[in-house]
Amino acid sequence: MDDRQLLRYSRHILLKDIEIEGQERILSGHVLVIGAGGLGSPVATYLAGAGVGQLTICDGDDVDMTNLQRQTLHREARIGMNKAESSRIAVASLNPDCHVNAVPARVGPE
Image (cartoon, rainbow, N blue to C red; front, side, top):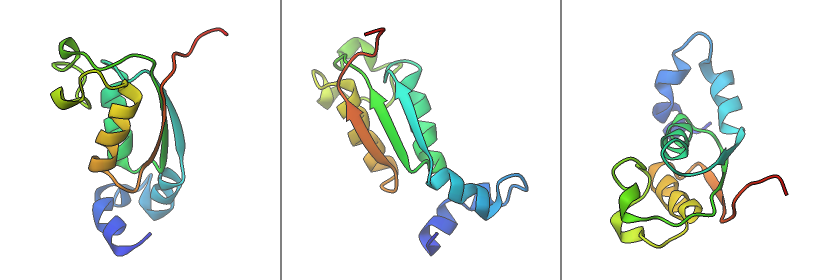
């Protein structure tokens, strides 16, 4: 962890149950988020903010004006864009340490 990351994640590092070792595990973590809508959007935001090193976000839907009041990763300028891609852009601006794989597809039983 470099000095910038030590400062950024200092509040986690202060926690007895996390400390430096725990934050390093978070930084090396990979989480799959299925859906970038009303629940997936804030989940991805908090995971990226916490320092998860890699997110894979799957969503086959596009951003719509009606999504914007509750799907906090998306912006009016990205209406019509796939939600996974919109989320990738938002997470990159929130935390450049978090690599996002955008998967523009629905997840189902197939």
